Image (cartoon, rainbow, N blue to C red; front, side, top):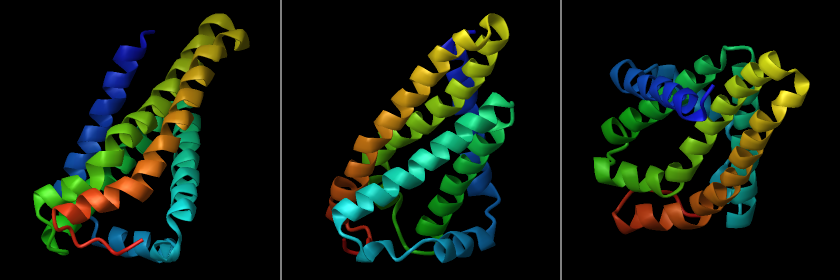
Length: 177
């Protein structure tokens, strides 16, 4: 099984999730997300980067584990759905322009999103390789998962230190860190 095919399928599922979140937002999701999060704007940038990394690494591990049992697509769909809902809320309710929203997502998202998708693809490939070669075949999936987890570190750094500055540079209403 080729990584490129699995990754393309995972990316398609993520895109469907984003489109669903834009088209049919669950209004309670924003409240749910806000209620479960600590007051991250009180953290130092280093603490914020550590919090973001831990959160995203946990998400990657969950998506990987779910992908091993073939329901990882649900995690990827839901993750995409969250981005779609947040995009619709930010632009529709919070007054962000599309450019401001993209400035608040893209600097770190160009690394973070592919890393999360790689974690899902790694789970699918782990299952496939274990079925084909036994447990010694799991190394490819584990290496891809490790790669995804490593990519999340610079993404968290960028999200904490660079993204807020880029977003503010285009006038996005981002709280200070």
